Length: 416
Image (cartoon, rainbow, N blue to C red; front, side):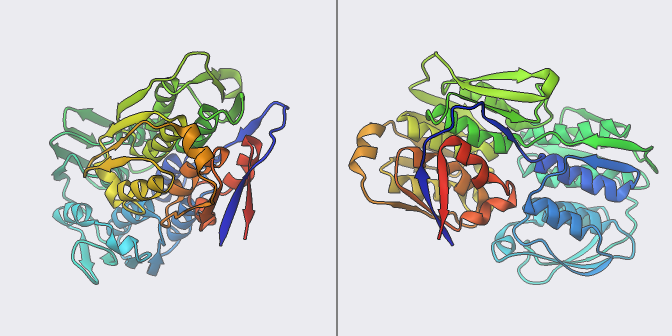
């Protein structure tokens, strides 16, 4: 399937959009709910990844296929390894079998877990025999995906002696680790984070608790991009908190430099994005080590504004749904952008975007690489170019209503 994106007239009525619950929060809470059934969850994410995880947590033994869901692969590896009596084959898509998991498996095995590789060492699929884990000390490098660390933190309170994690080096994606710890706090699970050491104390049960999932800040990034590129004067999205647990809430400060004003409506738990009277920067420089999931949106926004950017801290992007750095370079160059990348950074040169868009008369076909964020990040360029999106329904991985919602931004997806 493909979608031809058409720039349409925007309604002058007030624009309000309800964004699905955070996938990051939802998936963490689902795993905790599997360990402590007294937890109730509201505003759960409608994403494919969350549905896959929710279904997998009901399995006692046999094959579990997580498809493209990287978070589910990491969290379930830890969960099933500590579920006594479980015999699980944990598999996924072709791309999932290319995404490394050795660091997490090594950490779990050092604690006493029984996990074997069914094909290439260091990669899924995995054979997991759940057992009681009695060791409570583990060490791993700090610059790995935060999902490895969060997977260990989430199963830690269910272990007989809890868990102490020692991290070596500079920690990557600290906000996601703090999110996990904040959710443990909400359940009165004692934990500490001092220096490079994380400690979670054991807890046998949790009292009846209702957890409300905040909407996804990563999904909010696409509306920031539409506003920055002049699609609409303002849009209100919900449900968001100024005291968010999500690292991607950094969007508010980053997009201020790109000409978007953010106003939190506390009584309505919503946020209004509007075009700022202040001029945007001419060259954006930002370290996204703590917020790598918004890199694609930011790069495309900068290109659409005709400004340059230098983004660093992107070393985890190469092991996502695709090699996101290479994918960004490949697709932006189709529009005439000049992009250079390293293993952990991306540099975009400024350009005359008006001249490029007027010169480009043919439809530009954007490949999405089975990556939801590639599709959504590039959609706002339909305001300036003729765009055809390959595999547009990949967005259901995190934002099922995306194409319907962006009609309010002036872009209609004609599926073919």
